[in-house]
Length: 209
Image (cartoon, rainbow, N blue to C red; front, top):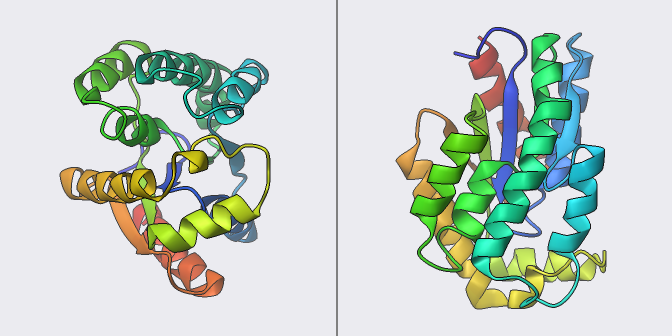
């Protein structure tokens, strides 16, 4: 059951899996039901965290070591937590975030080195909160990568690691869904956007009771 206050929902998945679109649609769905969600993202979601975001998602793929990435992501997440997530939940508002700690567990903890223990330890000490519900959008990495690179957003540092990296990410997110079945719901993101939105709404409605 959700904590007192609003519902905290994260959307996760590989690059290009449609998280941002579905996060927006979920916020619209909640507003249509009289709720007042905060739509946010990681890295980012607060002024300081947005500044750190540019360091992480732009530039050469080998710009940072996995250990440095973990520290940068955690610094951004702490700012996001303090300035956006906790205040919104305390006001009784739902929070929908495009990525949260699970991305660090998979991207840095499982695919860029055997660092999951480090990620979990820092998370427990510095963040100490998990979403009430995590929706993992699952799709073929080749399709998602093509879509992600086609955006030409300038924030494609992780897409530049290539298809083998995206395949490892998918395996990592699937393993995470199996590891935390009470929190994580795997969504088939190969469907059309309306069908995905329907599956997302069904999962959220079940959690809201």
